[in-house]
Image 1 (cartoon, rainbow, N blue to C red):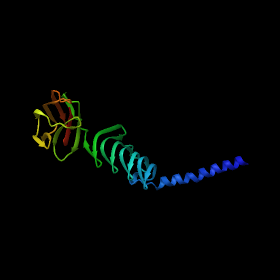
Image 2: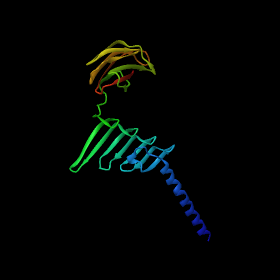
Image 3: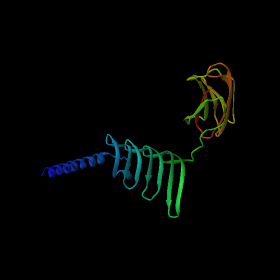
Image 4: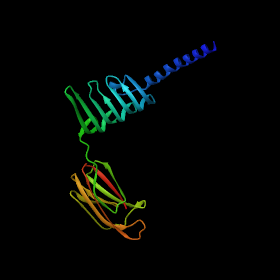
Length: 228
């Protein structure tokens, strides 16, 4: 008798818990109509957030934010087409791969997207041609307002102002000096830039020769930081 009561209690607990879980999922909304019928995944304030799967006419599996696909994910249309890549507010934005399904085979489009529009192939990353006297370096794209490349030099955690016989050359643009940064603006990309100078080593015991040459193909505003 006790075993039967115990089993009945387990069953009642399971039945009572199951509707609560489903109800919580149903209350979590996806704000894209075509995938709003069902959602399974993480939720915040009634909207899909984090990793999850949304289904309707179409299907999306990936990350969400405020009810929209955001981050990385895969969208599968009812006709068999799919997109795997980056999303922003429910639209393809960033790097991704679109696969168009046809009866005689698939057609694949790789590249960059913005607001669901294809911008073109992914530009090559900056390429270093030569490096002497540089411990490490970083390239950072800061925007698209100016076609400009600015260069900063650091040593021992601080900006290195002790640069001697500084020489810079470029295949395009005009020289630009902004504060302690130097480089080129009004550039036609791709551009090849060479930087040469002397500075002290980290112990300031002797001078070292620095030469750094690189190519940037993607238009925009770039900042290169050299660490000696």
